Each structure stands twice: as C-alpha cells, then as structure tokens.
Length: 206
Image (cartoon, rainbow, N blue to C red; front, side, top):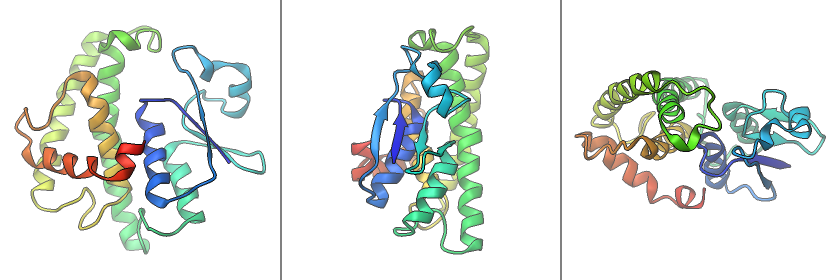
C-alpha cells in the first residue's frame, strides 16, 4: 500500500500517527508537494479526484481518501491496539468526540491558518483575512470547552487514548501557525493533555 501525505499538514499527520500507534509496517509513504501543486496534477487527480491528502492506495489499485475512512480501514486490518472502540457503544462515543474535535477544533484552526498565514497564500486563493480572524475566535471557544472536559477525564474520549486524541493533537500542533498556545492562554488542562500526547513515540515520529 501507498500513503500519500504532505509534510506538516494536519490530516496526513493524523493517519501517520494512527499507523505508528498501530505498529503497522510496510506502507510506503509518498510525499505530495502542495506548494508545487502536485495534488492538482493529472496523475494524482486520476487517483484522488478531490485533489486532497491523505490518500491510501491499496494493493488492488483502489484509492481510499478522507482521513477517518483511511483510519477505519486500517483499524479493520489491524484491530489491535484498538483506537476506535471495542464495541458499538464505545465506538459511537469515540466517534462523537473525534467528530467534535475535527469539526469544531481542527476545522476552525485550519480556516484561520489558511486565511491569515502568508505562507499559505499560494494554496488558499483568495485569502479572506477577516474570515480567518473570526475563525480564530472559534478556536478559543472550542479550547475552552475542551479544557473543561479535560479537567474531568484524562483523554479526549474518556479513560483511554483514542483516535480523538490523535485528531486533537494534530490540530493543536497546527495551531502554532496561528500563534495559539494553550498554556499561555489559560487552558492548563488542555496544555497538560497536549504535553502528555507529545511524549508518545507516534507524536515524535509523525
């Protein structure tokens, strides 16, 4: 299998961390240069019509895109260690927390960075700085409820590390580009959680 990634991009990093946590080997990682427009090249679009990363090319030639779908496929191939839920009940709650983190935390971070950071001007045309700044406000709102939740439980989805923690960690690391620092902004529980995840080998490897 081949995993198409882009260095420093949060969604490919989510899959890379997931693969590392699983201990999966044998997947070739193929970097795609977004600044050079390689994701829009005809040969890549033939595999991934939406021109996005990550994408997982299977041995039979099929191509699976969208981060969550790729992780679901890999979880099915390699059930242990479990990261998405042992039974329907736990799967539902882990997915809920993962979706919340993805839509209400990672997405506003990405929008803020895309529309305010000069280094992404070539990728986001046109940029809308006012929209980006408004998304930065939503990032702080989300940080507040995440911080409150993490005062009550050790991990994003409960008592154990899961895919929701991977999504949230890749988001908070990407938020450095918008100069967000949880500890400096008073979100002590969120910062403590971030520091614990950063100590995991998968966080250092991806």
